[in-house]
Image (cartoon, rainbow, N blue to C red; front, top):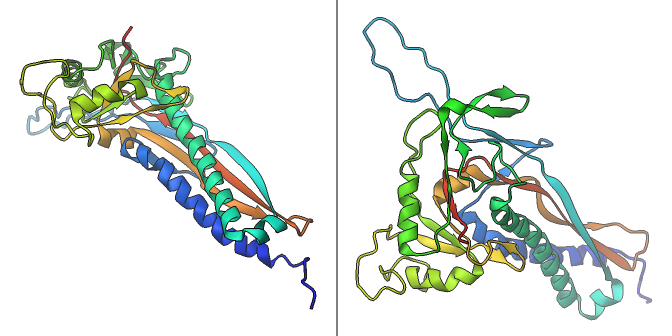
Length: 320
């Protein structure tokens, strides 16, 4: 009995293998950023991310008259996700000759492409922290010496800085060392929230360029934990005053991310609240029903954007 080459059942079999390989490849690539970035699922054309804010310290009560409060607010950042896709055809003969091998390769490679698209946008966000042309909701680059502490009022969907609240800096110029890490931690200890309260954070993760990974290993040890407790290049055995549960990660690859001397220190917990990947549609793979029964077309698709809502939870360093 002749084979029915017009049958499209083979396409359904392909999809099981392509889809599974796609999801596995995507998850493996993106696990790294889950340590310092949160994820938001949105159904809106854009997403409003708000920084810290509150009502400040309570006022003394005289037993009769209530003290009416007013919220002091941070800034609003608008993230507008965009669509990205790529399509790859699989021929009937390709699938028949080496069905599992070919379909898995397509799924894995599409998964890599989808993951790397999101990953590279994350790297570029960190790399552009020093870019004076890329501004956050407070009108400053993510790394700046003059972030306004609080907003005064709304102006459309944006908020206008309150000049009376003062400014703060999350940008230093020290090369990576234990002393520089402790300096940054001390700097963060003086930050205020928009309502004038101490900004409580624990700077427990150092982000480094690929070129600084060797220095980070000397400080933190091979397992990314702070174990040697000494300053690299220092012959003394002086105790390292930074947190023992600190870790580091590399934020750079290819031409994206931090430059050779750039690094940062951040609070991992607050980063996941205030720095997000916003998905309208998470990465997925679809196969299309084409007129040609001998071609199975697979399309990887994602609709996302990245952004930050505050700058207090991270301190950047950009040495000369």
